Length: 112
Image (cartoon, rainbow, N blue to C red; front, side, top):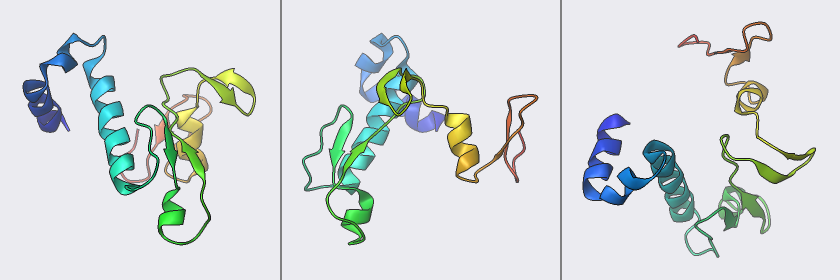
């Protein structure tokens, strides 16, 4: 990741003027990737993207998908305003074990 990030900073020096260049780069890269995957949709490069990947695969009808960033406060969460718990999300998806005492995510192959 670092080689790609450093190369992008060299190509686009405006990244270095951001308060957090890495966060900005990741948001741009993920949003660009989602937009490319869902090409032909009414993709908004800020947060909203039309057509879920499932629709692209013919599994579901047209949907609205929201990209939630773990470091941004969101007003439209089910419980109201707050942050997305990326640790709970990863554990819920079976990607790791979330230890309730240490609050660390433990990956079955790579550990914590």
